[in-house]
Length: 262
Image (cartoon, rainbow, N blue to C red; front, side, top):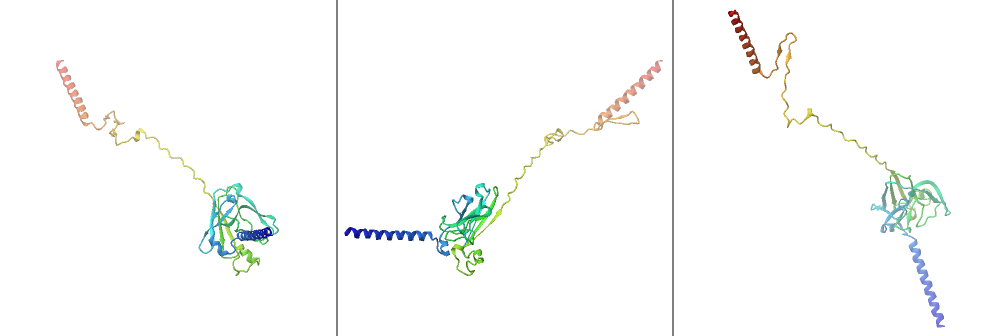
């Protein structure tokens, strides 16, 4: 009898513990529960650009709008995937887009995440399909991502899922994004250095070598056989004239003497 009571108490305790554990799991799986809780968590974006392994931080502007930029210098083949969406039955179908896919999430976990609004998608705390920006291998891109926690998805409002003035449903917070393709500048062509010709003898350094004095060549009078000596030595010219005159004088004297003798 005593053992039976002990067994009943043990079973009851196990059931209580089991229910408590289930409640704890359900609470953690239920995500943030309300929009205001987001401010107590880190907000980031992850996707095919980093193999879904880490998050690029989105910063709060102080008003509940989180934004960040992902720059990819060179898109690789493994970053480019075919985007799909849920057709409402749990089946993924192609969207027709091929590019870089991503989602926004809290604390680097999948308990709470956001992506593109899809009217057929059964949304939960981890709802919506992946966002996709079209890009090709080799592209240099900048992707701007924004999570606006201050409003419901415009598509959800248009679909009549919520009213525009309703309180913000955390499962319908919109992810806004855009992509910019960066045109890398072409490498500048190298201009060959200009070659400076070697200095010639004519352009030698005149600071260390005195230039020779210019000489005037003798000029010849075409109408006579008289040659004009080069200028620059007047004394030599006068001496030459004196010698000629002296020779003429000597010749005259000798001629007279010869005549007298005869």
